[in-house]
Image (cartoon, rainbow, N blue to C red; front, side, top):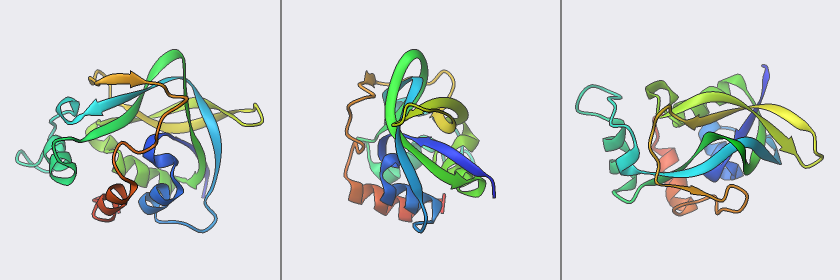
Length: 168
């Protein structure tokens, strides 16, 4: 299968988290990298689009609220010239990238599939795939993309929710 260089930020930089989402632990290779021309933001539950994901009674916001509670917050990236975000570049296959897109709910436009340029430790530039906040969405605040904690909650809670997710 074709290799995809996926740029991950926030919780997806954690090997346990990315492994749980894509369903693979063996041979998973990653490298710390910095995404150029993007900024890291935090989106709250109220700012998540209230779009239908399974009929009118099941919306994206309701699903997130049920799984995470009213205090839900999530990292996202937005395009911003001159911006920089630290993360991980994971070498995965196309099927695994599709699982990430499902987790990020690209199909309902919460996040969008995108391309970017990341700089590895050696200084080399790489074309990467990533998911970005959907067009026109609001967010609470911009944060320092070079110095942030990957989890806005606990890692244990995050892994538990992944294990019960529609993405797997």
